Length: 328
Image (cartoon, rainbow, N blue to C red; front, side, top):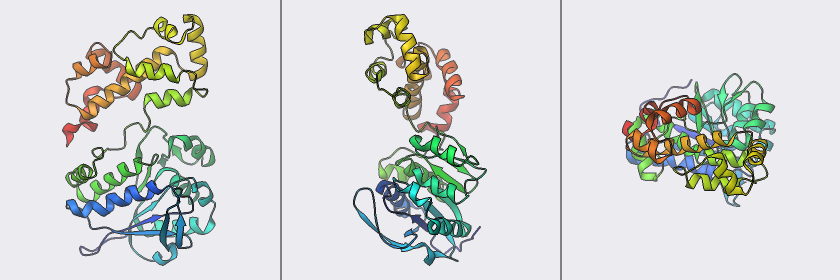
């Protein structure tokens, strides 16, 4: 692993390719660029590609890049592979993959944003490691690269010196965590505040809400309106007969059809929605846990505690210690 002198600027190389998602590049790039303004490292940021030159992103905006070969035999602080619709094709580009391997050997830290994980996986850099990508592509990553342990319900993962992140804005979360690693959490928190984004996360949060999970499991979208109604009525009467009435079905038929469509019982969905709402309140408020339990329909803190243990494997108190505002 490269070492850096006290006076050298840490170099961050962000690799792009045709049809890269622009925000996968500019989100982390802005984090690293602004770090020095709040007392962090003064990073040198380089955009690179296999061939160099202009690379057209998914938005139609062109990014001017250097050839990855120009950075051979140079000490790199961070090598970051962007994601986007072009990632699958990029992962089959032998020149890009070979250069990724070479630059990774020179980098103190390697990472990917979103589907950039496919390039890292094709380079062998994720073999034997845990990783994540955009939730929509997690199954594909696992199927194509069985040597990678894909953890779909994560915002980002650090496994050794290799980092991977979920979709789009999760790359910003990951970049902030990298700044925290380099310059300390206080610097990273100040940086998050200046960018008006969430406080620095540790990566343990879910990358998609229970509402989204319900919608993606219900492929036909038959119960999307019901799920939206549930989310707006967590403190209300959410017994099965009430849900069946909401969608104009008999209780027996609703229970059967709902389970066939989503793979879950209605009761389990209600629990997931309430846990998701409680989790959000634990992260961004200092409300007493008993109050949060009341607001999310659990009635008391013990029911909330049992539900969070079942769904997340963690108690409300411990979750707040790890992810709440108070830790800052």
